[in-house]
Length: 229
Image (cartoon, rainbow, N blue to C red; front, side, top):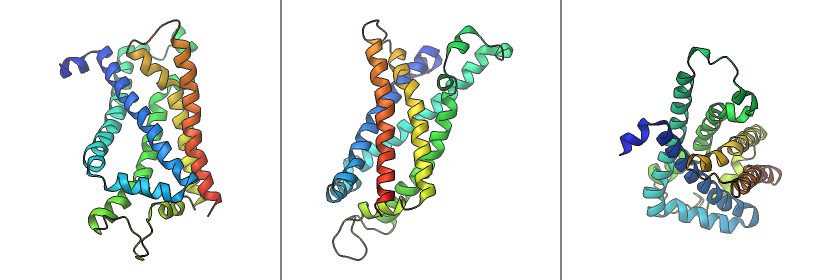
């Protein structure tokens, strides 16, 4: 069944949409947890400590998330390659549909590749040091090495956003994410057949709102911590 799903263009687009829904939901959760660092450092520490030490999160949800990210981007590149092959040698000729499409819709693979590059930086900033602290150094409690009993997550977040160039990279990455979401949100619904004259305008409007508010929230967090060193 899975093989049949990926052998058809419709099936691949459907799978792409499902992975997009999964990542769209994750972005909301991730933003809410990170926004706690602005509201209450102690609440952010507690939430981060729970997610960083809970076995269900660490050994089930986290691997699923990583697999979902890899799946979404790999399938996106596969779809782009197959679309180019389908257009054939006359692909350079501009059709009416390409003229009416936006730059973002024509370059989803470009914005996706840039976001993927940013995710590599994000993993290097937060995920790899976390793995080192917990599993190599053996500090599963999440305490500062000074032993004063304070949780370390808020301090680490502040430290990462002390550098202006890093904040600039994050801001640019989230602007690209916004552009990617501006087309991808509504496209995901269309791929699963959610196309109705009454509901499609609502989905498009909410998609535009989502594509603005989610990246803007992450940008605000980065700038907030940069300015409050």
